[in-house]
Image (cartoon, rainbow, N blue to C red):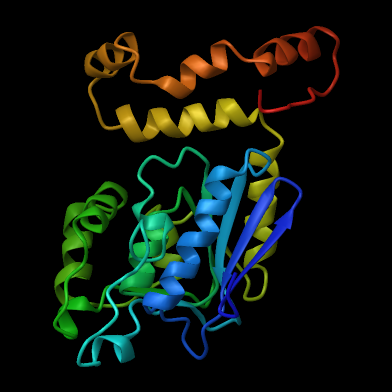
Length: 260
């Protein structure tokens, strides 16, 4: 894969570790490796949930590698899904957990916002420093940030670049968990195992429905469903797993999911 992007398969869980000393910044080459990793996750039916973290205990990701940006002709090929891969996979129905192990800065914060669940170590800090280095956040990141935080808080972060500590992020419901330093991967794996124990097609359908209709009025959501837009839900209804779930309930045993 890459000496700066490591992957590990743990049963149904796919773990991706960004390891680009010293601050886990992402340049074009690293971004392409991350694209490759998440394409592997997307395309492997045996992988049901992913975790992304940073190596070490100080930096999750500090965003775009400014060393790349300072070059006269910077490499702008960030991969088919753009910066960090997963941030541009808008139709990825499998859940991704962000394990924030330290500073989560600028593009790193934007990358974290593309996850479905976020757990952070108590030493983590979040800030969008783009306005202080002559850059901007992406449109998708603005949308994600505004959906997770009150408008005035999001605006403050965007316009000032101020730092938000992990406890404040938890209090504002940006995070699912805050854990002691060094425990973030244990917390992420615990959540991943709970997800992996559920019916995978059902999990994928729930994620697709959240993405497609989560912000719509009920009548608009129902219209999309009747029109056949919720393809993952239709797949669940026709699946062997739906029958297995009913049988397991009647027989009072744990279901054996196959993803089919």
